[in-house]
Structure formats: structure tokens, C-alpha cells
Image (tube, rainbow, N blue to C red; front, side):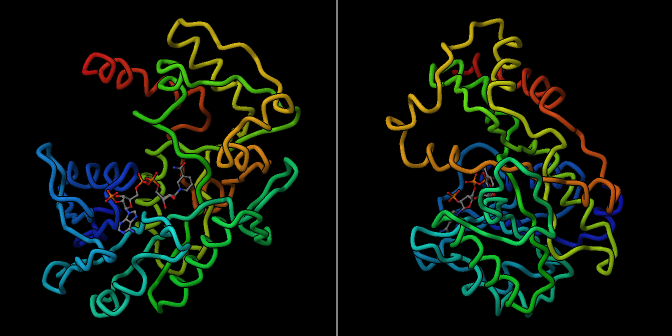
Amino acid sequence: MAGARAAIGRMLVLGGGYTGRRLALTLEAAGVPVVVTHRQPPPEAHDPGWLRFDPEGGALPTLADLAGVTHVLVTIPPDAGGRDPAVDALTPLLRNLAPAWVGYLSTTGVYGDAGGAWVDETTPTRPLLERSRARLACEEAWRRSGLPVQLLRLPAIYGPGRNPMLSLRNGTARLIHKPGQVFSRVHVDDIVGAVLHCISLASAERPDTLILADACPCPSSEILGLAAHLLGCRLPEMQRYEDIAPTMGAMARSFWGENRRSSSRRLREGLGYRLLYPTYREGLPSCVGDFFLESKID
Ligand SMILES: NC(=O)c1ccc[n+]([C@@H]2O[C@H](COP(=O)([O-])OP(=O)(O)OC[C@H]3O[C@@H](n4cnc5c(N)ncnc54)[C@H](OP(=O)(O)O)[C@@H]3O)[C@@H](O)[C@H]2O)c1
């Protein structure tokens, strides 16, 4: 954090959702000035550096709103039409500010199906799904912006408030067996940590594309098993993928239709980032405190 704190004058987080808010709270706690965009009016609960940004609704920030911004993280996904909602609206303004770094949160879905093999930053992109093709187009739009963009590709994000303990509690968890199928994941605090690590590096040391993932792709049944153990509850009945696939929604089926292991070796060994949660075995127990706190509030 010390390196990033020294480097950042003011951070702009585009999209104060799950990951954006987590980064903003971390920066705020470290005394780093931060501004975070939202489409909705400010909530009553504390939200750091709230700024309205809703390009479809015509709400755009001014140069004065963003004065002093040195670093930017884009967490906004493609819109319903598959276009990036922010790049055209903000590029002229951002060029004016000349930030030292612009991180774009993308997805490892751009690699398509690898039949369970490892993919890394050198693997050619081969998006199969329409949303992954849209994502690749958004990456390209940011790359063409002329800003110092670093693409950060993510597998499934989990952490406090977003993990299989919640689906076990609300009865939506499914124990699905599909031979050979694995999923990669990353803890939200490792996205925050890796973003700060990238910012602290000299620009020449930063690869233009980086996968942020933990070191343990595995079947979803493994992490669900640990979630049930941590809660002391029973697992749902095991279902065979081939039996239930026809009844699954299109989105769920699309996740199960691709199989790859996303490698974060470049982040860990090339750039020297030490994962806070190398596997779900450390990451999921770290969410237990929040889980019981949220359960009480509910
Ligand atoms: N969730 C995953 O497992 C996963 C996996 C791989 C990649 N990713 C990608 O990683 C990024 C961060 O994920 P996340 O789960 O933290 O995202 P999230 O919680 O959904 O937050 C996204 C943020 O973007 C804002 N936003 C969305 N559409 C917008 C638009 N048209 N105009 C302006 N703002 C808009 C949202 O604003 P409001 O607050 O106003 O809604 C929200 O603050 C996303 O691009 C996501 O697609 C996610």
C-alpha cells in the first residue's frame, strides 16, 4: 500500500459496485483521496467520494469534478448493447487529466473454452459467448483511447457478501457434478491488492494485460463443500450436469459450457505480488465473520 499511496494523487473509480466500493474504502482508510461514480443518488449509508456518472441518462462529470485525478480504475461492464458505457464519454476529459494509469477490469471469458487447460496472458483470445466478444471490443476501445491502459482480466469474483455460504443459506446452492469441470476465482481483496501493486510499479514494468486470479482452479463442489463445513450445514443432493443442463437458465449453462484454468503466474512470479488468499481454503473462511454479521442484520 505504501508505494501506491505515494503514487496516487487522487483515484477515480468508475463504478462503485462490489469491487469498486471495496477499493474505494481501502483507499479512504489509507487517507488516499478517491472519487467513485454511481448512477443512483447518494445513499444514506457512508459511501466514499460519491459522484454521479450516468452516460445513458446524460449525467457526466466536469473537469472540475475530476481535478487532480492521477489514477483511474474502470469497473463498469459493457452495456446491454455490448458497448462500453464510459470510454467515449470520458476519453477527452481523461486525456486532459493525463492520468499515470488506467486499469480496466475485464474477464477471462475472452479466452473462451480451453477444455480445462491453463490459459495465461499469452493465450490467444477466442471468445465464444456474445458477452465475451463484447468484452473484447470494450478492451479494444480502451486500448485505442490513447490513455495508459492496463487490462486486468478476472475469473469469478468472491468475498464477503458474495460467496457460496450465501447460496447455501438462501437455499439456491446446487451441488453439480460435471467430470473434469473446474472454475477459477479471485478474492475481491486480491483484486484490490493487485491493483495497488500494479500502481506502485514503474510504468515500464507493467504488462499491458494481466490475469488476476488465485492459484487454485477447482470444481465448484469443492468450495461448496467447505462452505457447508464452515456453516455446519448439509450439502444439497448431488446432481449430474447432463441431467439438469436442459432445465438450467441460459446464463448458468453458459458458465458451465466453458472450462479453463486461469493462471496468475505473471502476477505472482513476474510482478512479485503475494496473494492474500492463494486458494478458497484461506479465502472462504475469511468471509465467515461478515456472513454471520449480515445474517444477524437480515
Ligand atoms: N462478478 C464477477 O464474478 C466478475 C467476473 C469477471 C469479471 N467481472 C467484471 O469485473 C467488473 C467489476 O465487477 P463487480 O462485480 O465489482 O461489478 P458490479 O458490482 O456489478 O459493479 C459495476 C459498477 O458499474 C456501474 N455501471 C454498470 N453499468 C453502468 C453504466 N451503463 N453506466 C454507468 N455505470 C454503470 C454500476 O453502477 P450502479 O451502482 O449505478 O449500478 C456499478 O457501480 C465488471 O466489469 C464485471 O463485469 C465480474
